[in-house]
Image (cartoon, rainbow, N blue to C red; front, side, top):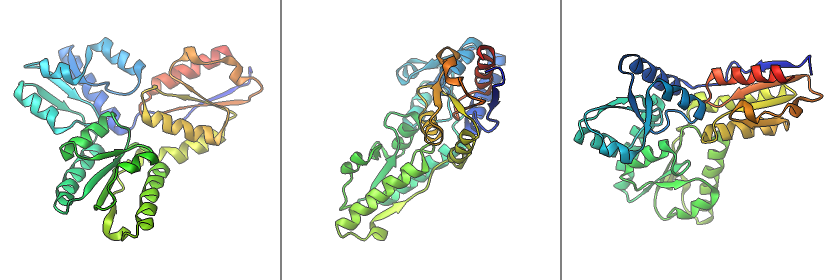
Length: 294
């Protein structure tokens, strides 16, 4: 145990969209000491608590509708058009930190929806229902998009109508392809022309999807993996599963309190990595804790 090699993955941690949102919040709080944020700025409780101590207050949409004459930060996940309408009505200054990749996707879906409606088609969004990004995407279709999370959800689709499919930016490329293949196979079984009926829009964030092969390589290089992430992070759950597939000795933690020293018995190396919503300082804290208990 005393010779345990501890490595923090240099490629893990915040994606550029999260970095942009947090830096914007920090810069504003240096001047104002108070800022509202619509929803958790990042799906990591420890980072949210840190920013809360600086003056960031997390609010929901109900609270937004009750506010007037103030500043509200929009996080990287983006928001539906209704949020901007409320802000205009209540004289709220929105500080938009929506990720550029998400904004581009919102624009794509809005255009796609307007196009496919003309031929009585439907927009499908592969993602997690209730996730902030997905809510913002569905908002681009006047709430008409069909959300598909599992293969069972494909039953919601009308296969007599044309289909445009998009994906939440942080989903697994393999999982998205599995859904696409399932829809194609259903169309073929029904005797439909796939090329005519089905258009696939690859809208995954390459910075996020590129983490999967990187993490698998990192997981194979270490005896034990400690994956650090908030429990709300969809991206964290997806990336942890990739680590677990590669290295059975992979453990998910949100805090140092969850670490068990028995994980490292008879091991020579431990790798610490995390989601796109995991701050580097938290991974370093985990590394220091493991060093102390080993």
